[in-house]
Image (cartoon, rainbow, N blue to C red; front, side):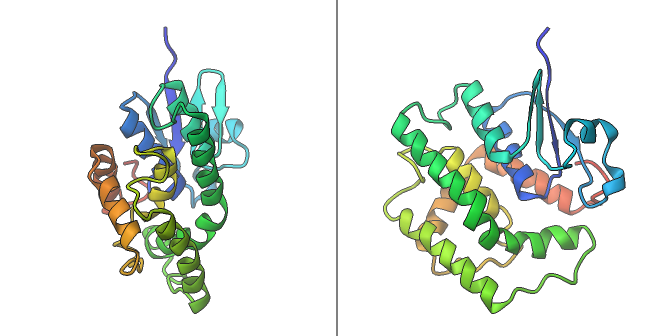
Length: 220
């Protein structure tokens, strides 16, 4: 009997959004377990036993227990032989380059918009919604790098969508709600429009809108 794949996640956090996007894109059966991340005493014992750091997402796939969202993306895309993880070695290197970029500068400079203006208010914390001029400067620094890289391209690597697009694109899922200033980012907006046309992006977005309209204490 084949084991079930389980992902522990918190719907509105960007790293969990990545996992949700990928699962929907792969169209694979996964059991999602909702973790109330902002309430430490609400985390199940089983989750903390597997993952003492309490981070999401957490993948449990048979004997494989895996944290770090980008590692989960690569593991699942490769396991299911998806074109989201390209077969060409040079393209694989480019995908990894963008995912390393995402985990550093991109996460710090872009993630703050949705985190402060969508996630924290959803959890009932409104006092940190303001962004400073320095935040905006850092945002433009990173976003301009992506905008330049997308010149003449629909996707980050090759001619097809990959887990690199999912990794970075997940940060723009709440671009409208967080009032992300993309007016001058022509290439980024074109790239995002391609992602938004994907059925798996739309499916994830519908689920997230439902989650935002309900209490965080109620699993989506």
